[in-house]
Each structure stands twice: as structure tokens, then as C-alpha cells.
Image 1 (cartoon, rainbow, N blue to C red):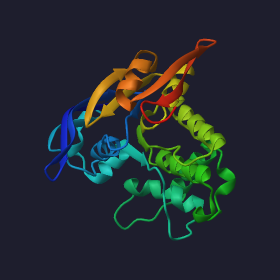
Image 2: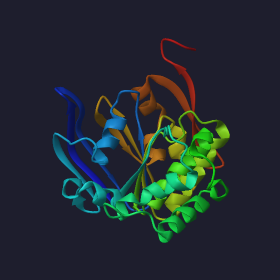
Image 3: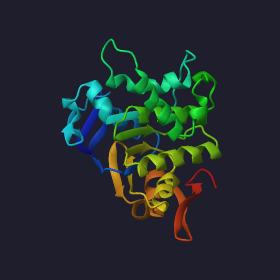
Length: 264
């Protein structure tokens, strides 16, 4: 569904991505992990066509994204940002129906069918009762669910999420993970940047097709299934932190111990 081959990208002369190779199959989630400044968000922006790669190829549905215009690409890949800021109090329904823009003509307005698709998407993420609420009055978890509904309204098979649980409390983090799990069960392909290795274990522990890729200094250092890649040795190599991978009733999760040389 998504294939990135020999990707290079630089800001001016500073190389940020160096020979990156990734792929994600239909119905699979690719969890992109790595330290701050490793190039995760830049990689996502290249996949979304926001940044033009210096070399290499990015293909979605078997075709280079360079062959799509922005509307065509939006029908293939949707985006959930880390945080959506709105200075105008659009209603939740209006925020979600904006996902239909790629299906409308230049001077067209959303029709009844577009609003029905938006309402169905809100119902999917259990936000149907919020249709008339101003988006600016929502909590962080609620606004992220609305953004997931908007991505679903685009009717794209692939969804890119940039740290979707950042700044959320423990409950809302689980709510977002459950929403992503439902999208995977529906057949969507997900690429998700995250700082939490346990997110990958969460999906693998639920029997979903899950892949992890560690991005460090602009390069992919490790890639594979969470149970194969999320090892204590690899976590120490990437984050310089000692940790334990614990198994309980066949379910795995990572417990950080301390950062080497600074905190014990």
C-alpha cells in the first residue's frame, strides 16, 4: 500500500533523511519510533507530498505520489496532525465535513451525502453527540477523535498520524488507540509516529498486523515486528536508556528503568 525507496531529503544543504526504505501493507500499522530530531515528522511530510524529496521514490497504491495532484493524493492518504488549532469556532460537523474537499469541485459546496458521510465518521469514533459543539471548546482527546473522523471522511485507504496521543491523559490515550485499532480492523493502512514503544505492542498484542521502524539520525536502523525489534538492546542503542521488556500472559510491554549517565 505504501512503499518508500532510497529516500533522501535535506533542508537547504542539511540532510535530514538518508536512504530511507519503508513499506506498509494493506491493513497494517507502521509505528515510526525515534528520538526528537530524528526526522519522523519530516518523513511523514514527504509521504504527504508537503516536502519534495531530493531523491528516491514514494509510492502509494503502486504509483509515485509525484504523479498525483494534491486532490488525488488526498483521496489516497489522509492526515491527523499532532494538534489541530482553529481560531474560528467551527462546529464539529463542519470540521469533519472539510475532509470532503478533495471530492468536491472548485466552486462546489458539500451536499447532503457529504454531511451523511461526516456524521457516519463521527458515529464511528463515538462523537455523534458532538456535531453542533464548537471545535474550539473540545478537550484534547475529543479534538483528536474529531480529526480521526475527518481523516475517515476523506475515504482514503491510508491514514498518517503524527504523535496522535501527545499531551493526552491516560484515558484519552487509550481512547485514541482504540479508535486506531478500529480503523485497522476496517482495513485501513496506518503510519503513526509515536514516542511510546508500548503503542506498537498494544496493536500487536491485539493480533493486528504491526511493524516497527526505528528512525535515528535520518536513517532506519531497525525494522520488523514489535516482538522482534523492541528489544532491550535496540532501545538502549536508540535512546541510550536501560529498559526491561516484560511478558505477562503472553502480552509484552516495555518498562523504562533509567537514562544512562543522568537519571537513576
